[in-house]
Each structure stands twice: as structure tokens, then as C-alpha cells.
Length: 155
Image (tube, rainbow, N blue to C red; front, side):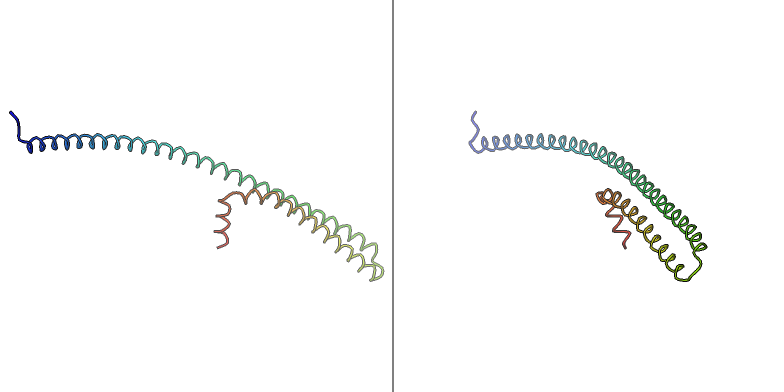
């Protein structure tokens, strides 16, 4: 028995629509599977990157702490050296002043020499201080977090 043409077409259209629905449902399932796989991979990679970042931050903090300690040690050493030279110079001046205590002019000359010597020692100290800074600052300026900290410290 032959079906009328419009019933055959309706059946074919219905069959075609069912095939398309099945195909779309299969594609939707494949998409959901790939999406969940990508989400899992992303979360795994993200956790690894965060862990690595935390380790690097700790290492950089340790380096910054060590550099800060080194800088403070150098600064203390330079200040101590300056103070020692200053005290030594004062002792020498006292001896010279006691020996050359005759005319007032000699005392003034002696004191001006002492003043120049103290200034020279101060310049040496400041030179060493700036050399220490010159070694330390380029390393710190390369660190982005240092820029952020410096910006916050200004305000």
C-alpha cells in the first residue's frame, strides 16, 4: 500500500528532524565532555602555577631579606669605621693641641686641619655608603613588587 505523498514527506521530515536532534544531542554531549576536560586541565595548571608563584615569592622575599641584612651590615661597618677614625683623629688633635697650645694662630690652623680631615673622612664614608647603595638598588629596581612597595611607601 502506498501512502499519500504528503504523509511520506511528513514521515521523512519527521525522521530527518529526529536524526538532527540525535546529532545535536551527541554534539552537545561531546561538547560537555570536552568542556569538563578543559576545566579540569585548567584548574590543575592553575594550581601548579599558583604553587610555583608562591615558591618564587618566598625565594624573592628571602633574597630581599638577605640583601637588606647585607646592606645593614655594610652600613653599620662603615659607620663604625667612620666613628673609629673620627675618635682616633680627635685623640690626635688633643695631643697636637696640647703640644701646640702656644699662640692662638697655631691653634686655629690646627683646628682647621682637623676640620678638613674630618670632612675627608665623612666623604669617604659617604662614598662607601653610596657604593653600597649602587650595588643594592639595581637588583631591587628589577623587582616589580619593589616598585609597588615603593609606591605605597611614598603615600
